[in-house]
Length: 165
Image (cartoon, rainbow, N blue to C red; front, top):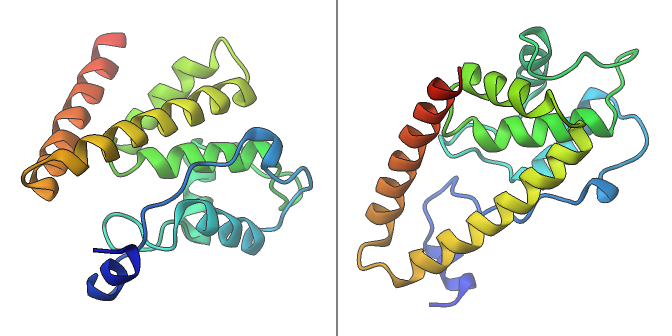
């Protein structure tokens, strides 16, 4: 079945799988206002989150800043660093609780810059996504297999965070 045929048979509200996250150099090097950030991140992450809600809203950004997951903007303007944090948080929130993401960021950013970590995160995300898509294509029951794999990977990640404390 072609991708056009699959899109026609997809349930309402289903989104295309997101593409690869942009390289650090491809993130805007000018500061953006909230509505621009939400629009841009929607293009990077896709319009719909895994749970059917929006991938990112202004309220979510404000909450991430308020809880310390994302640094506060300077004069209501968000820089490249903020976009990197948001891409990481939004990519991980489907599989880790926000407290787990916070611990991961604190641990990883203690010895490197957000630019370095984002680059590593992006490469790992791309490799894992390719591997999952390759395995998914060979599975007998692809949705079930992918779901079970995601659950197992989530449990492993949470266990690793606990062990690292």
